[in-house]
Length: 211
Image (cartoon, rainbow, N blue to C red):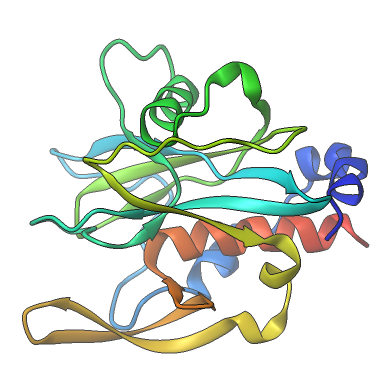
């Protein structure tokens, strides 16, 4: 997708509603229940992430990260830049902007906020994640936070919109345990779980904006 075409559709993208439950359910991992929109536990923490769309040689791309390998639930996964809400954050949107600057080195002044996507509950880490879509009018220069980000990757929007990007994959989650899950597969990267669910909502919004 040409970036100028994406920009021309911004007014639609800001307002379009899709069936979020269906978008998320389509990428729900095997044997994982879908939680109600307001679900939380006594210990649920809040986090925010930010899908960012920006131009690369005139083509619209989406920024993603690969998390470092660590002893935790999301070790080595493809994700959006983002992280845990902190007390100094005035809102979840502020959390997303702060984490984007910390993790991939892009300051708030280089981004334009577009809209909020639908939050979802992540049971394996007991987080509710709030996604916020933003875009940049120019190419971005990334600086990764080495302690949390092993690599920054970009996904062309035209690839996201292809039907064959969705695959059913087998994911090793711990020791010898594996699960089957729908995923977006691009090059050597497998995008699954909460990230794929948010990404599928964004994909449906973009597709609907093209009608």
